[in-house]
Image: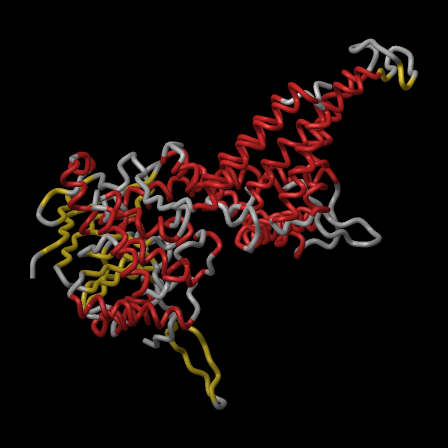
Length: 268
Length: 293
């Protein structure tokens, strides 16, 4: 297994020194499915943006596919093209990601930016639209779609670039149960295809179901744990301390119980 | 489909008796605007004369008609052009009443206001039709005003026909195919999307406020709230613009917006274009030779 991303001592701060990431050491290997979990504001989204070369570290280093991932490196057209074709990012807010005139244009945007021949672009659009069952929407304006449809189109717009690595920010957020099940199926398919997937989420249930590794970010914006879902979810005190579960008092059959609760029905 | 800003002034459903709160009025207006955008898309997708045309051909022919209207001086020919817009609207399944209301409540009113001084003896001396001292309405003045009003109405009518019978997405594709730079077309597309998104945000803000209010609030409170929310929307708009730019970068954007425009004109489109050009030549010929009034 080769390493696709290596982060070493990464620190990033916003504005007036507000830290979003603080001393992150992380290696993501090819074909891994990694869930970055943490409470709101722990730095998950910033970390994903960093892996996509959209924000850069203030100190520390990050390499992608063996090359330093810096602003200067992405100024090089050949590296930028290679990097963008290998890494796809599905944003949390599909509305942000869908900026083209029609769904067809949305799916064609990435391949056209890569300079692919028009016939190849059309072929990819048709193939992905059919696979994600959005072929009937190709002529529609993205802002007129439902939430679930938008999410499908957002994912499709990345898949037409055939990325080797998929980054997804809160993929199950705002999805209805049927769309969540569909998305988990898509993630399972990518795992079978050997793609690398990194998702940022606070949905422990979805993370445990779709990933083979879980990285926990603390509220201090550092890595608090890194292991398999079973290893991480077994650490109740850790999950409580990083605010991923909370204690909740129940009354069952006349007696009171204390449970650790998380979204997605994980009981620690 | 018409750009959403064109609907903002439309009236929302009114509550009988009593005064609706600012929050409710604004939310209703926005909701009406968004609903009309969606309805316009349905209209543009329904069968009809103008809908069946290739959007590029439609755009070119309508521009020809609008330019012709600006060259013509004869009131009779201008009136004929205004009638032509209504005939085309009817043939495209557009309600004549709503079409005429939209044209005359905006362009017509604008034309009347603009041309009113020219109708008076103060600006245009001549035979007085309505004696009002220096503001008496004269025959030549009235003719100038009528000419201006019908010209504006004809131009607006043709413009409205395009936007009501063409889906916004097709209109943008037509602009791209006619040589408008891809970056400009993409910016127009994003602007429309952004406006829709912000309108929904503003609507929800007003509804959220109304749900927590027992009265409509004073005018001063309402003004303060609106100003504060405007600032919020402006900040949010800038944040969204940054996020959209990140999303574009993520998919390889490097300053260019190549597109795959695939529009094909048929024999019907070619016939329509030829007929439109002939009609424009005929209108100008009639104007110059037969009906010089």
